[in-house]
Length: 294
Ligand code: CP
Image (cartoon, rainbow, N blue to C red; front, side, top):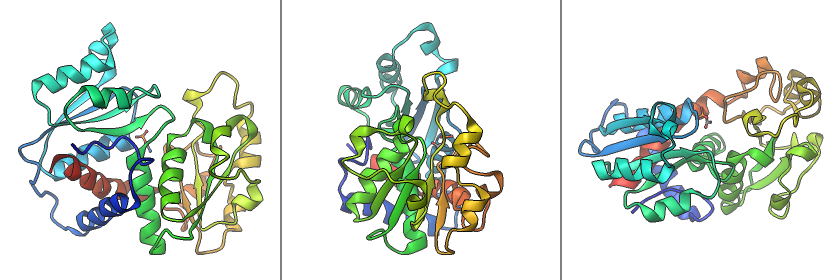
């Protein structure tokens, strides 16, 4: 049973072994290695996705798995069927593993206990997004060689971010130094015991500047009063990016709100690793699917 529900409860050794295996998959030149050819995998997205959904599908197909794609909007969820009944339905048809994205917090652990196939968390509420953080760590490790001692600033909508949480838990296991920066309305006070909230100038003194998307879809109405004001106070503007020393890398899980948390031209800045993060998501998810099914 190799579910992946989060990184909080995974050891540094387990995370390292996934990252090492991802490096192996990245090094392979053949497009397909059919080691999962006898496996059926369901991608169950109860919340929208582009990157996670397609990079899981790419990873599964590169490993030769049979892939079933489930989109809540085109399913009986629209008739009121529960998430549990949906997953049990697919399980009863014979899937070997499920990749699942959920809007609510707190459902996944219970769900994983009630079904017998491994479940891979593709993002649950603002709780965890483990494969995103794995690909983020992979990207950092690839650039800097190791994670120990790395200064990582996570800037933006911490409160609504599962990416911030998964990165925090994982980075600290490797001895990286995490700092947060967020406007008061987007801070998660319960995380302050784990990492300090610092002003923007201090946050920019880091090795990794990780910008977060303002999660408008998870906001109570009117939380972002002015996108322009947010950009001026917390955005990675062209001016701020120009002041970053050359060794610093810029990251963002995407999708980006261009000219809100990150300026248009900074997305493809020479120091940006945003599209490399997406590329790295495929070998990382190959390692995760192999771990779940082999
Ligand atoms: N980074 C990320 O999870 O993107 P999607 O929501 O498009 O999957």
